[in-house]
Image (cartoon, rainbow, N blue to C red; front, side, top):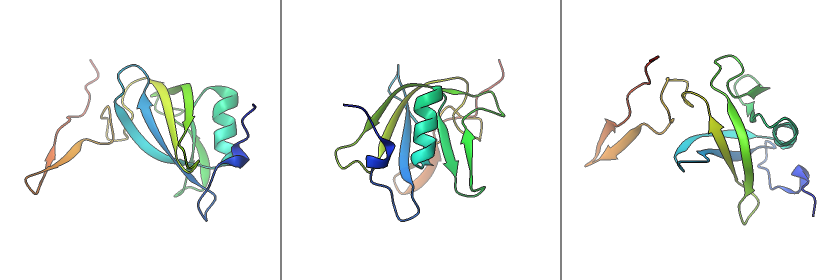
Length: 121
């Protein structure tokens, strides 16, 4: 059965959440938004393409930073309203220069930074 991005369940803005996960380690890297066209572009090119809500434009992850996300597999959840994007990540996934955007934990009611920025070594 061929896949059609139009069969996904998008929100009222035409977007669907996409969680990027490292294909090898299973580490959750980031969450961003996609629309039907960015899903189609991702599948066609193998380079993960998101929809920027602030810029109202497509962005290929790593296009300007070099921190690319190569698509390994796209997974659709049971309700078809969320995507899991398995990737090979080059460099940090977060714009703060961290491997993951999820670098803050809440422990005993306090926010704790659990992941330092990556170095250029």
